[in-house]
Image (cartoon, rainbow, N blue to C red):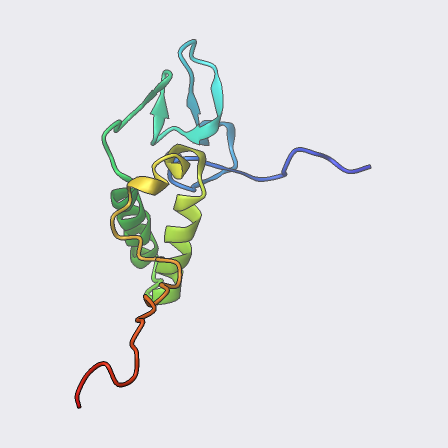
Length: 118
Ligand SMILES: [Zn+2]
């Protein structure tokens, strides 16, 4: 039998791993939130409602750095992980730093040979 619930939950705001009951945030009624950690979510509200995704990435990356991880690829992983979380998914389109422009088609120039430069 497979268990459909993942064994490990992660906070949908900061990607922190939620292991112990004390790691989880709380909803309006003080019950455990299954989605967010206690640092992000308390009594049904985000502790920092105005934090942006980029700030969250920077913060988590800083935590990794303090933990001794200085790898640039780790930062990239953090950015990817945070971006995929529920809290930030809808803000994707707002990110001006996203430079994944689909391959630009060069406009075809209809240059007729001989039209120029005699
Ligand atoms: Zn969190």
